[in-house]
Length: 297
Image (cartoon, rainbow, N blue to C red):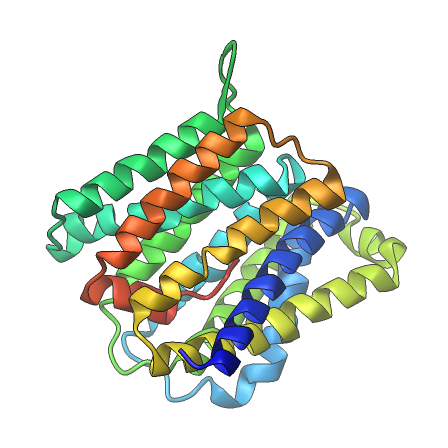
């Protein structure tokens, strides 16, 4: 990989990590309702990408459902989960996305998993369980369960995307925004009364966070991501972007004083080792996963 591209990739990972911390700040410190935050993000994305909504792959219902699962369904749960969990623990639980996608691909796409990737799946789940463990038993954190639910939503969307042909990444990104903004707005109106007033009370930091999340992350970092995937092996990119959870953990410890003792260290090492094994043993399904991944982070 060219040094310039490596630098861009590292910058992209840092943007994703910073966005995780900003999202935690918005929903916890500024106290902006998380579903409203998601709706605002997707509204900006949709407004910017309206010209590229067409041509839309058929059938339209599948495109809309898939886009929602990878957009509003994923980010809505993730933002709510971040409100009740630490960014560091969330970064580890988010690594469940890759093994869950592979398991679903076995069930619905006929994918075959050999022992090395099975080991990677086992290590990832073991790492997440260690993170959720305390001396008194499993700590079933509501926030981390919601984060796990977000990874499931995204993984189902990935598998469904495999059945959509002729889809440009930028067009799919536009449909992610359009398919998500109205459901998120309705859910926010239902579950988060006073959400507009809360957003206004948060002031310019909230506006800056939404603009950063929509333009720099969803449009800028995603475009760079797809560009690099077109130039280099998906396995290489998937291995290198493990910098994102590591950076998120470091920033979470620095910004929010997240606890990072032996349990978190062991859980993180196990989960990331598992994801790395899966990534390095990737095939066509792995390439597809990397090519359409939004980060989401």
